[in-house]
Structures are given as C-alpha cells and as structure tokens.
Amino acid sequence: MQSTAHESEDDPGPERRAPFPRWTNSASSASLWALLVLLVGAPCFLMAWVRSPLHTGQFERVDQPVAFDHRHHVRDDGIECRYCHYDVARSRTAGLPETELCMGCHSQIWNQSPMLEPVRRSYFERRPIRWKRVDALPDFVYFDHSIHVAKGVGCETCHGRVDLMGAVFAQHDLQMGFCLECHRNPAAYVRPPAEVTVMGYVPKEPQEALGERLVREHAIHPPVYCSGCHR
Image 1 (cartoon, rainbow, N blue to C red):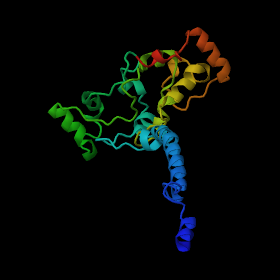
Image 2 (cartoon, helix red, strand yellow):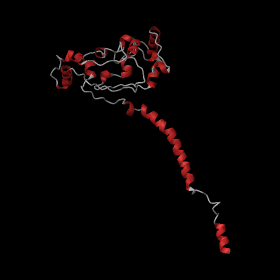
Image 3 (tube, helix red, strand yellow):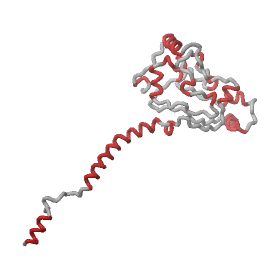
C-alpha cells in the first residue's frame, strides 16, 4: 500500500497530464512567425521582382536578326529617328521600317555584305524581318507615341541615347512610377517639339523656365488619374 501511494504521488494522473510535449510551444510560435513572414514577405518579394531588371529586361542587350548599329546610322550617317520610325508622329506605335526602306540605301551600299543577307532575303522573298521588341508595355497600358512627340517629349527621354548603342537595350524600366514622374512634372522633361529626335539634347535656357513656358504654350496637362493610361 505504501508503494502504491508513492507511485500515485509521482504520477499526476491522466486528468492532469499535458496533452502535448513542451517543444510544441516553440514549434507553434515558430510556425506563427513563419506564416507572418510569408504573408508579408511574399507580396513584398513579388513587388520587388516585377520592378527589378531581372524581370523588366532593363539594360539587357537584345540580339536582333540583323546586326543593326544605331551608332553608325544615327551618328555617322545622320539618319533621324523618324526616317525609319515614320509612324511615331501620327500613330500610337512608332513603327518599324519595311525591308523596302532598308533596301533603298542597301541596294547600293554594302549590297554584297554577308551581314545584310537577311535583309536581301526578306526583300526578295517578301517576308518581313522578325525584329525583337526592346521596350514593351503590358496590354492593359494605353500609350500613344504621337501625343508625346507632339508635346515635346524627346525620344531619348524614354529610350535613352540609342545613338550610343551598338545593340539597343531598354534604358529605363518604364514602370508606372517612371511615367508618373514626368506626368506630375512635365516642365522638367519637355523640349521644343522640333527637337524631340535630338540626341544629347541640351536646352538653350534653364530647363525649368523653358519647360514652364512650353507647358503653357502647348497646353500640356498629362493625366495622373488611373483611366488616363488604363482603359
């Protein structure tokens, strides 16, 4: 009887015994912290990812079917942007030149060059060259090149100094923040419309004074509300 009583004192009994081991307290606490980190960290990671060059392709060289060197055509030959991208002042898209436009020069210049074989083949077979897009906006974004050109937004403002690029790459991420920075303060960016294609543009007067004058003269009031660009 004494032995039985002794065992009874050491054993708390089924009604007093904890249902889980003590280590489950630490496990449950760690699980809650992990869940909190996941709920907060996952959206933050995704938001950072879609804005990073790894996703946007910013600064990434795009190899084209033809090694077209903007440095040579723009700086050496003095070809203006609108000669090839002739739709930019009248259309939403800047447009790409047809092979016939390229052959206007290259039927006489470098007409035997192996580098231009894809151009000649495209011309004689009447098949367009499959150029790769460098700057791309999502389908839910409405953007019109013509209005920007008409109001004096320079080509290099969005596309960078393409006259210094052997192979064109995306200079800016073209995220919404980039666009809104200009829309909220257009005076800091606009130039005379006649000079939109000038590379390395330097204003002849302080940009602040010039921009404010151009904003008044050309009635520049870019939208900063959602439906202005998301239609």
